[in-house]
Length: 290
Length: 280
Image (tube, rainbow over all chains, first blue to last red; front, side, top):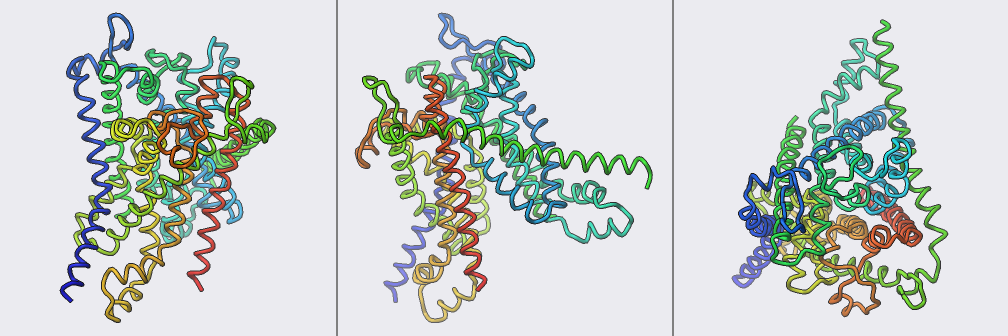
């Protein structure tokens, strides 16, 4: 009997260890990013690093200001949200409240497909269709830039927005809608004036999730944004926080200030993501409590 | 009904149809375009050879093999870890705080962008094992841990409490209950987790660029693990962005699209199969 108890305790300990692995991973990632991100920030100076307008990492007199990347990431994400959220939102309301089960099933698998397409495929299609289209429509010398990135990101966040919004719209109690019908509201009015406000925490969570995905996307953006460290402007070639890291990592030499600065950029990106995660958690919790 | 209400209703209805139509058109267009441009370029020669400057041809056999190796290696590590973590959460954990912390950590992990995984993977694994498929696979393990954990957890919750109580009542120890009652009950969750992970691994590029590299050599499994290698997705990126080989890039894109389709289909099928069995 004693032996059994020891055996069970060992098994318990093993599972406890496995359970704590996710926590360990988060701690390790955070610690590694901080350790490798701090030196360059110290050397360059936090203000110069965050608010410097010029990035010239390989120049004779190197400059490491990442304000262009930060602003590009913020503008790019905001643009993607402005385009992607309304489209996703109206699609979600239609699928959750109006579409018959057949249409809904087909559209849901289509949305899942959209979610499953690898980001490089988005990048490839963007490179060959979107970029030339922007060049021709707006008559600019090069179509790759912020606008192309915004459109690609808007498409990429669409499935997240639709799926999370549908889940929370489905969860709205039928009594709310019945009460609204009884007061003489039409179905459409009910959906938008009763169901949507009731699901607003979930929809907010969907938006935050979209923000997270847009700000973290690297490869698709890398292929369509042109990748020059300019201050953001719609038709100019730009770099995001993610692509700034990805584009110079391959040729920066280990231990150099350039590489350390790339780690610092990653640290800044990580901070953004942590903020977004906290916001996401807040909305999801509120959605559940309701 | 007042005119204002009529306009509001009409406007909202129009917007809903427009947006849903837009989404549907987008999916159709993306698939149609990539398949039409890609399929004609998928030849047996492309699939069965490696790139050669001498013969002036590009083959993606090494990339296919690397993708398979990295999927196998990642799953071998992530499955025990993820399933174990899920079992701890549903079967052992008593302290609510601990559960909350672990679940928050898992959520955090699934929100971290892949480029950051790539950097940390480079520091943690590539610096120790060299730029290699193994380093890439270990990076992907961390990325997919939350997925496997969550799907397993969901299916564990559907194992009726009475089964466990019955087994305990017959005098079984905790481990025995887990082995004989709980584990068989979560097969569907594990399979779903597997499929989702495979999808994510196949689609991943940013996390692999700096951890697994982009070599195109044909190796056996064990030698392959220790050598750098590009997966299909990374190869697509390199061929499209660095080398301007769009025909090859589209061929790979078409293959990836078909794989995505198959993966989505199998998730649905698995859900249906187990859903039916459970209802019986």
